[in-house]
Length: 281
Image (cartoon, rainbow, N blue to C red; front, top):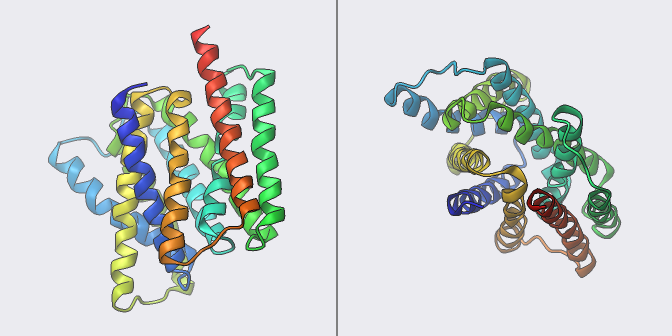
């Protein structure tokens, strides 16, 4: 595993953790308005970067870039909706079963094989989700459903990014994602628009800052190393989110809830280890 990939994914995890907290803090705003501001805030970075470095906005693999944008919009929107229905650590943990769906998509689309022991690992992670639903009274069926569907869309993202490969600059990939999300989010937010007041402007605009750095460094990490090697580091976001949520929003977790979250992470990390050993053999 490349050292750079480790650093990139760690920065991405911290940025996304801060983004999660700010989304939760902005619970009074319509989710599409939050998506709009999160996207606009990132475009402030991406568009000048592309202009300055004379990089084409259109990119090379246009169909895949649009697909990545649409899939990313769906996953992000559903996840923001889920955060409104449960504690952040639980929402992030459930969204991170996305590697299970990524493996299924890889099986169907890239013809990658899944070992029987990997199904066992996936079973451990799913057991964690089931137990989390049972132990965490802050989770309702709506939140659970939204988080799982978000995980399905999120599972498609690394497959698309790997298909794009190094043919397109990471900022071009992020820019497509943000433009598509800004347009769709903005249009859907019109009917329930709420004018921000005071510090709410800062919170909303900062979503784009954290989202931008999280997205860019995640994309760089995925492009600079195999998905299966870098994937375990994504789960640092769960820890970051739970710590910040506990300090700032006074979110709390029972020991059983923490055990369930640990099961999810163990199942997914074991899966990565199995895939790594398969590559070495």
